[in-house]
Every structure is written in structure tokens, then in C-alpha cells.
Amino acid sequence: MSSYLKMNNLSTESSELLSASTRVDQLLRELRDKPSYYVDMHIHSKYSRATSADMTLENVAFCAKMKGLNIVGTGDCTHPKWLRELKKKLVESHPGLYRLKSEKNPDQATLFLIQGEVNTVYREKDAVKRIHHVVLFPDFEAVEQACDALKHMGDLSADGRPLLECSSPELVEILKSVSKDIEVFPAHVWTPHFSIFGAHGYTSVKDCYKDKHGEIHALETGLSSDPPMNWRVSGNDRYVLVSNSDSHSYYPWRLGREANLMLLEDLSYKSILNAIRKQGRSRIILTIETHPEYGKYHYPGHRGCSFSADPAKYFELKGICPVCGKKLTSGVETHIEELADRSKGVRPRDASDYVHLIPLSEIIGYVYSVNPDSKKAWNMYYDLIRRFGSEYRILLEARLEEVEKHDRKLAYAIRMVREDKIRIRPGYDGVYGEIEGFLEKGSMAGFLS
Image (cartoon, helix red, strand yellow):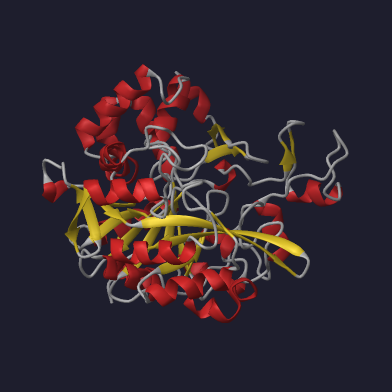
């Protein structure tokens, strides 16, 4: 057994002996000559609400390549107009994986995985359930057959992420009747709204999917939680934890901000399925995570009152906002505390590894006090990509001495990211978290000099 597989079988205590940067460095060195791929299985298209009008296949492919993503979801494949565009612009490159027909270098093309997200809304025990699900498809024929069945449940053309009037188990039954190779998993499982473990959701996967729970193999952690938080609920152990960007923009600080490093037996949709379902010869080795504090719903709070609270303060306040007197929007950290049956620090055996990253554009923005979308930030970003190849390579693999030759301040910031020494003001009630500084004593003075 190779060391990266042995590492995933470490006991809780021994795995903690390795620092995050050491663990990841060892994993990446082990995978250097193996068929491993960065995969983001959940994005959106220009047909989803609150999504960039420039969210085109061409823009996604271009930025995915800079990011270091090998495979990315198409997003919104159930939307009629987007589906027509997908069929027009994409060609199968590997079994079940597609590339742009216009790609000038097919061997280096960004590959697309046919993917959508649906919102099931239904009443159960006098409560309204709103659950988002990510759906992966093996081919366009399966998408068309699924759309033909789902169009009776809701207007597929109304939104890229359609609202369907059916229960979660009914959705799974419909999709599995089309093809057993369609994969369904609950999206951003802890967010307060529209999720399986949200404020109006369930306490277990089985409660949600009923007799179809055996068809569920993965849970998407979402931006506001990471694997250690999910490990606190023992009922989640049987599911593979996946991380995806859920991006509504093609910008590299959104696309691939969360992703999965997969070891694949071959480059195909089937191998991706096997990585999710079996974790055998194809498996998820590592997930890329934003710091959960960065997510929009990590802490409970009220955006309108500019108020947030940690779990202890939330329980002290009995969930009531001290500013307006209304109920606070719940946070992921708090809800996990309510459902947890384990203490912090417990790691299930065979769990995939993970690493916290901050997008390079946002590191540049913080270091130089500029907007990530500013001309200065883009010029610096492009220059770094030209020198080092991709964002993931810069953040995870590049020798810091080489980065330091290019930019000393950025090299220092990247080291802090690799060592997980970032201090973040937690996000709440739809407000993203913000970088506040570094945890290393005295680092700010040296950093700003």
C-alpha cells in the first residue's frame, strides 16, 4: 500500500502529528506520476439567478485552465437554452467527458462533466422542505430523458437551477429510472437555506431520502463547512465528502475555490462515478477547501444589523438578535454543534485528506490592498500563472524560494496559507468572511515592510 493510502488510515492522534503543509506536500509528491485530476463538479451558467451574464463555456474553460482544474461541471444542464448550447459547443473527448469543439489544443483542453442542480420543494409533516441536489449525467441522452420526466414537476426554463415540486426520494427515483449512471448528492449540506441539514431540513440522510438513501454516496460540504466539521457527525461516515465551488462566476477567485483531487483509473465519467461510489482504484485523495469561516453562513447573525455571534454567544442569546430582537439566521458552526455526537479532532478511518486554501487573487488583493478584479491584481495574477503554470501549482507545489524571487510578500502570504495560519472574520447571514491577518506572532510587521 502506498503512503498516501496509508496516510488515510492513520488514527486520529497520529494524523495530527503531521502538519497540514507536510501532509499535503507528501500526498502531492506521491501523486506526481499517477493519473490524478482536479475536479470541480458543481458550477452554474448564465441562466441561473445571481450569475454573471459572461458565464460562458469559453470563459469557464479559460479560467479553469489558469486555476489548474482539469475537469469542471457544465452547470445547469436541465435548462433548455443552456442544454442546446452545451450540445452545440461540446464534443466528447473521453467517455462521458467533453471539451469545446473550438479548442485549439484538444490534448490540453479543459474537460466538462455534464452537471446540473435542482431545488426540490415539498411539504412533509406540515413543514415545507427546500433541498438542493447536484446531479451528474453520463451523456446528453440521459439529460434529455431526465428533462422529459422532470418537466412535469416544474418549469425547467425558469431558472438554471429549477424548482421542482417533488420530494427528495421521488427525485432520486425518477433520475435512477432514466439511468443508474446518473449520480445525485445533496448540495452544500449545512447552509441554513435549501439544504439537507439546514434550518428547515433533516437530521440525517436517511430521513431525507427515505427508501432511496442507499442511492446517495456523497455529501457536498459547502463553503461554510469543511471535513473536520462534518466528521463530528458519525452518521456522515458512510458518505464520501466532496467539495465544489458552486460558482456563479468564471473568475478564478470563485471557480475552483473548492474542488476534489481525484485519482482516476482512466479519464472517464465512469471513473469519476467509481471515485464517488466505491473509493477503490479510483478515489478522492484530497479536497480543496475554503476556510469554513470564509463561507457566507458560518456564524449565526443578521446582515441588516451587522451582527454575528459565535456558537457560545448564540446559545447565550437564545438565538435572538440583541439589535432588533428578531430571530438570528442560523449558522453552520452552530447547527453542527447541535447535531454533533463527537468532539472536535476525531477523524474517521479512510477519510480523504483536505487542505484549506485562499484564492490567489484574494491573497494578492489582501497583500496589496486592491480589489481582486483590479487591473493591478489581474496583471500580477497573469504574471504568476505564466511563471508557474497554474494557481493550484502556485498555492500547493511551487517552491517558496522561487515565488520569493518573484514577490517576497506574496511568498510569505502563501506560506501562511499553506501552514493554515490565517485569521478570518467569519461570514454570516449571506456575508462572506474576510481575511484579517496571520496567526504567526509578529508576522504583520514583517509582512507589510
